[in-house]
Length: 72
Image (tube, rainbow, N blue to C red; front, side, top):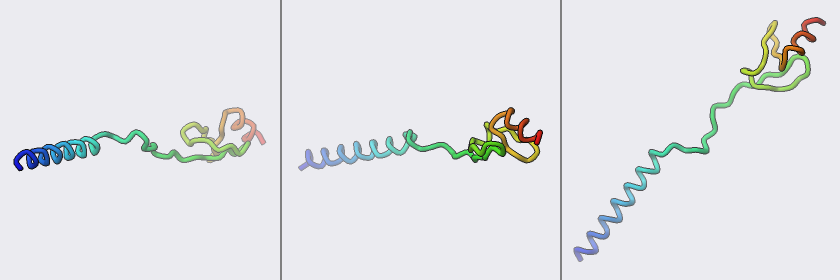
């Protein structure tokens, strides 16, 4: 009877250790924060705001489109 009780205690301890280990490991499949997308005023392509060029209140995908759109 004491062996059965000892085995039960060992199983519970191992279970608790594994459960606490799983909580501490960071999840690898969690996506990062989404970045705001903007539309190029010249060609209409959508791109991340951090990669766009802001001029005159409009966003552009490249400098050539900025120059072409502002020269009209």
